[in-house]
Image (cartoon, rainbow, N blue to C red; front, side):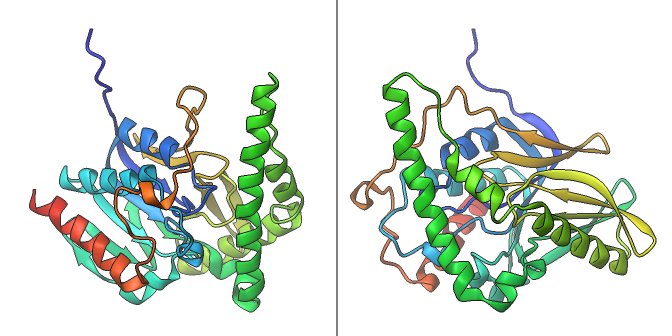
Length: 290
């Protein structure tokens, strides 16, 4: 019996808010998903890295394996568009950079099934991000700490034979993901999409997977959100001229281990942003040369 996993052929995959470099990032689940698909185009829709918190002494081997898998996908012909977000905004100064199948952009419009699709991260519609950046960064650090505490609590509940507790998600649902916040965000995005004359808008940022029509400026716009790889393990897939939200099953893979810095595959903890970027470019260059 052949145990080798056969990848699903998909025209386009869009993921966002992976937050590599933080305790909350579920890199092993993402790695499992990336190995299960073979897309022609991959959209990395912002906050793939969490550069806001990148200097902490934490970057597990699983996080580096995600980068290597992305390079493997590019080497096999997959076109990868890296759209910058707020947590990886340092890369915005590299807008337009291209190397082989890899390109960095701040946003991009593609035509799929004769429909215009506008991809962007979405932080431009977040009032907190735009007006009180210090508060947004403080919230990000607090949320990451909450995720770590939640993981510790879940280990305790597992030892006593009880199911996981999702109190980090419950608190976030009451604060950041309130109906008012989400509604204003989605409506603002739809209005900008109508002004640009597109049929679909695809974003991330608020960590809430979604796919629905919104009326804006007298036009119906499809609003799609890819969710995140912190709590929802979700992606957007476009195949056979149709969109769908994909939720990755994490019931089988073991939970990601939080490895200390000394166990890193590559020591990048003390690197500055320029060195990190050069490291990624070297990896991409090597994948295109292979």
